[in-house]
Image (cartoon, rainbow, N blue to C red):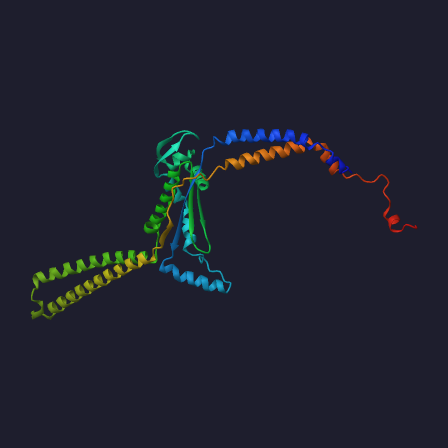
Length: 331
């Protein structure tokens, strides 16, 4: 094996001169390259969803079941659904089609120029599928399992665009919950509305029939003909029944509308989208240091490859002594 004294005999100053030169050269070249990389700015918002009353029973059931080690489907809570909505393709396509106005630098040291266009134009992809995939790297959503807080962030070359993207995404989530979210109260309200429309139509038909009857029998209550009195009373009771049904359905519809409002999840914005001032990346100083150290180590190892080979070479003895002889020296 190589003698340790060879390592001490090296001229370290001369040995490290070339690696240091190459390392400094790599650091300078890296600095010249990364200085032209555009800055990225990250805007962030924190959302706290509040479950509706209809979901509260399921959440309590899931919590009770979890205490016994039993998993309930859908027991993660409404905050998990919020993340799924934010990751849905329909919402992201709507976000890509939204027009924005923001200042943007054409290059690293250029003056900001006003830009007006959609996020799809900013990503500059060939089709919508690629734009949706690229949006996933620009827009990030995370959820804290303990606090249920959802963190929404966007990172672009313009601070104003990053802030507008986060704000627009929050608005799209609120619009989805208000307009497209189906609730139990909403289903009851829709059914009550349809049934109320039918009941009013039936009441109008009954009223028209009774009006026709009254046109020839105004004093049907005092009519000597029992058939006329019976028909008049039948029409009158039928009309009262239809009127009472319409009143009951109208009350049920109003109650269902109130329940629908209670069933809609509430989205609390803890921290609105901020306007970033400092860049989020690139970390130019780190890139320069890493590049210089990497080249320094590689050149140093290559330069002393002969010494490394001798240190790593495991040379066996010329005449190895058998194990049995070493164990029994008198044999």
